[in-house]
Length: 83
Image (tube, rainbow, N blue to C red; front, side, top):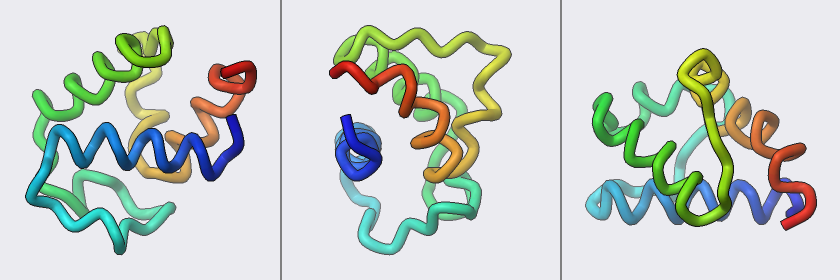
C-alpha cells in the first residue's frame, strides 16, 4: 500500500469508531488524542481493526508509535507494503 492508501485506511477505521468526528482537518504531527475525542478503548478498537482487516499485530510496546497520524503511517508502511 502507498502512504496515501495507508492514511486513508487509518482514517476509515477511525471514522467507523468515531462517526461524529470530522476527519478532514487531522494534522499529521499532532497527537490524535489532542485532535479527536479518542479514549483508551477507542484506541484499542483501532488496534483491533488493524488486526482484523489487515492481519497486523501491534504489540503493546509499540502503541506509542501510533501517537500521531504521521507516526502511525510510518509504523504501518513496512507492515502494509505487500497489501
